[in-house]
Image 1: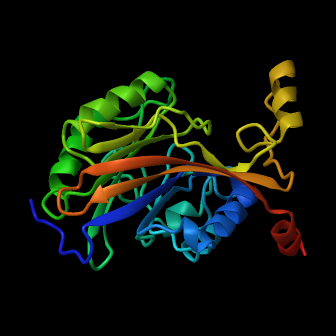
Image 2: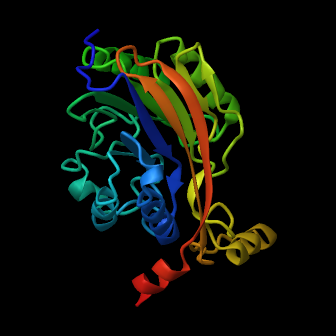
Length: 279
């Protein structure tokens, strides 16, 4: 294992849950603009950042300007057709590693912050999800490759079933990864802990988006779909109040071990910023 050449022995890594539409993007911008909310390395799941489905290149560049170092994704990453035009050149964006071998984009990345490196892996679960390749062997191979350059490894497990996320968390914690964070359900769980005395874990980091909708989407449309069973098009909720969910871990740079994990659950008034953007 190659140790990081570091200026500090501890770093903070922030992971933000699924960013949903403009209310999520504005909330993240406002949250990260506060110096108290900064971290040494910031990861965010961005598969829902463009009107709730997919990620446009414009919004990718917008989120980059907020200081985010890496974007993970999930099953909705392909929802905007333009993704196929820019994903190969988007060096801060990764898609799930267990898509077939010739799928565009990268399933993991190693990100150099000058004084340390962070490896990030994105993986899809298979329970109650679309059929996809098995995550177990492909993630293990990615871990082995990353460990040749850095001991700091983060995994975004984008999955529906909590049991599957917990199993993946416990299994890969034994491989010495630094953090395993669940995404996809947009509902933050309260089970943050440290597995194997090294790996920060939470079953779902939650989401960044409208606080008064239904997992970021408009309540009226959501309840209508449930009552009628007719799949009306979902729309992003926009009440002027958003929530920012995620976790921050404190990591020993030389060993890659997580020593502390804290949840982020912050309600933010974005009405003023929203009005400016509409204007």
